[in-house]
Length: 398
Image (tube, rainbow, N blue to C red; front, top):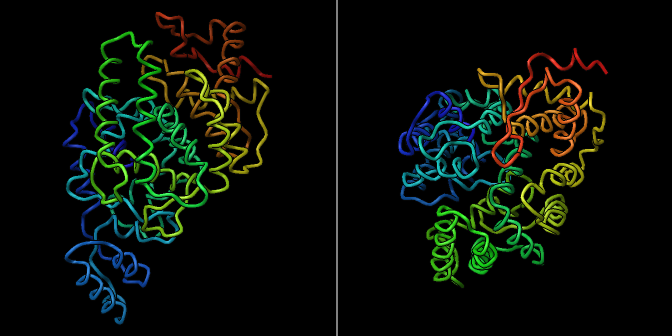
């Protein structure tokens, strides 16, 4: 996702095929790297006709001295083999070119119409280092771009839950009742009931054609998944795809863990169990994450940070984030500004605040400095964008 968003940011428009194929070609290009037992174990657990030959090549190379101890493998293999990764699953193959662009669209990172970047993707890029992006261009033994920093994990956790909470949270609520491990196909068998229940709740509230189409698609997906009920995992089919998407990323995010990094068997980490237990108590209305996500995440991951309550402390991070995200016209989406500000404060070990708290601070600041802080309001009266005509830090010294 890091590379995909960076690649999309280089062009005003693109296509699913162009971005997907570029990602696939980038991670599958061949690189030379030192052969190690770690690498041999990773390859040994892969499936494919060439596996045995590659293992033999690695074992032969390990007997040689540098530089003859190197082996040619795909770039993604070099990084996925790392023991520092909590999961070694996810190697991209030829048919995967479309999956990550579609996921980027679903997470609000790319526009569906032309695959151009949205401001949410700019937030992500602010959290990704140049070394990480360069590691996609050329293999780096010192930087594994598939590893996630704390800030990146918080970003993706918030994004996944925000955009999929109506299915994700009910699924995890049931999985929390499991004693020990559960498989992806067991999780997948739970999805039809969750999807149908969501349709029953949302149908009376559907007001647009798009909402009706979404509900019909959800019912068709539930019916397709139902056909796989009780059947073990085989890596294909709508059930396994729907379940894996709601499980596998959460291993990287610290919510789930695997005893075997190559398997599709999961269990909650202590932090993940704490966080999802809190978040699944009450899904609430739209925007409820604004009040609960970051306090619960800081608590669950035992970050030891205090909540920032003073306006000047919050404003410091908000204005910094605004300057990074503002358009040429000077406006920036308020939620994205606040999201980056909170994650930046946590990354700097300075504390955290809630999105709702940041929004309240901006309201107070606008009333006090109306010529400095301006809002853009949509037809429903919701605040969408903020603009600072000059630095509010100088105008608001304390």
